[in-house]
Length: 362
Length: 270
Image (cartoon, rainbow over all chains, first blue to last red; front, side, top):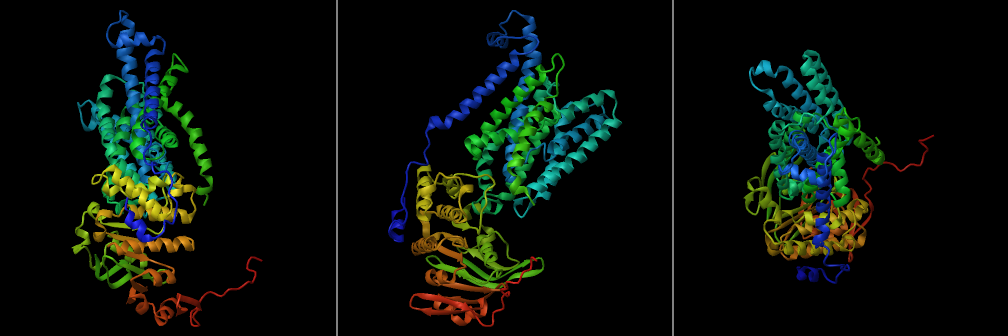
């Protein structure tokens, strides 16, 4: 504390309040993390245990440890529910974190990978890969390259949306959402056109991509897409401070010593790569990137060091639960999980819009 | 500390600054005054390294501004823009703490927290440190941004730091406006080089060591207030009728030859 400065200014002009304001209790700080972890655990146990063959938590544990005598349990857990649950964890975390960093870049809570057209962009590129992939790369298993195509598609849309909705460091929400509508329409038309060109098996694949589903989860697909989400996820904490500074505006972040242009490129790149990885295996699952960061912000505030890990946990938990609902609600058939997240996220988005009505009015 | 030599800035084929030569030295408050649109903010942006000069050179601490790393520069110069809106609202204390960003890796948490506390106290925002930024009035928000700029000054080496302020008192009430400039001058006396665009001429006259008068992107006059803010120069650049009494500068009214929109009460709406 620089007393000389205060003295130099003269009499203390203002009263001082609680000096210990900057130190918040450790328990209080850890509470949201513990809660989010517990909710995720609960979601995962429910997801592993519920379905046509029900299992108790104890049976799940013995099966996971290969100690069970029941072969059906072994097959259901290891071949179906475990890869699917883990995929829901990775995709949910990826979409939610991608949304949160995209919102930091645009300085706006409406920047969601689905609403801005980034996910549909990734989807149309994936569809193109499904239809044309074997012609361009004959004899190659196209599955391994789907995330790359999805990433490229997402990247193009991210770039277009960014260029058109940010002017002099400020985001126009209206432009952001309208450009998102335009991109979604264009990408949807592209996907529809590709459906027309494709054969029956491809149509089934593409339809599944556009609705969003985790039904295709296998260990193989999980292994292919996981790095696309997990590696960027590990890199995002390094961006946390820069994203906090961007909250003040691009110019101010520059004044605070952040290489703003480079950070913007990195954020766009990471968003596209995470969304690409998710869309390649699970299609367009909307609103996770909108819903989760918004709710977490209401609890712990917008500071990214807390927001990113909590958003990852929350996104994972949400998608595991949503997938469970998708599996159970019309059993023995199942819904695409994108329908479930849209049922939750759509009204929520409408509520956000209504609350912003005054500031959005032209 | 900051030296501009024949700086010209073009914006869409239009010169917004023309051959500006100016400097800010450690220990002094330099006030930039001039009518709306004269180029004060542009000049500050050039000094901050945010806007590149089309011609001429800008140096900070003897080194070409373009050769500075952004982080090194951020540790030596602090900038407060005219108005700052947050994308997501934060408690006041967190906004001020953002001013410490350049020092996270350099100083201990305790030191950084102390600087935040000191800055909040100096700007008079410590009494509402926990309130959400978006619930504050315009003047209160401006004080928070002022505190953030103060927090970015490295108090251990004030004599090699610079503070750039764009209209820091624009929405403050008089008591806070005076107080803010008192703080600024006190910092200058301790070695900080301060440059502030100031709208209020009496404040500029009273608190600045040097005044730079800008009109249409050119420097009209510069020097100590008594020499650069003469009634003649003020009449010429601002179109006002000003005079000096013991209390300082007094604006008596609008100069006779200044053309302003007519004040009429005729009923347009009908």
